[in-house]
Image 1 (tube, helix red, strand yellow):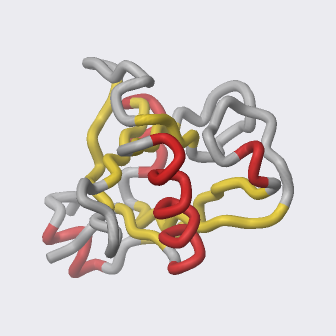
Image 2: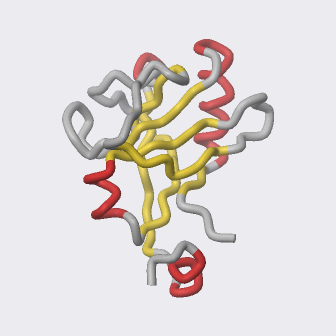
Length: 125
């Protein structure tokens, strides 16, 4: 089964730490203001999603009771729908409202195009 979004172990470690501080979490990838196209991490439900957003999947992180949902704006999805996204973390503060900002690190997306098999499984061909 093809997945649209995954995470690195470094991101998982940070998500576990942030969940202890903030409770269940969610991501939203807007491609808009603040930190550009960096994924923004919020306490679950704090960012309101709606018809203009697409739920790409849930990140089941070992050690967390609830998965971390990952959302993207529909407009941004049209550009990235053929791309697998990997949530990673790097040193340095972002300029958005994401909960990791005080930690001196920021989430970022690493991407690759889906293989033909993944594209077919996801109905993109």
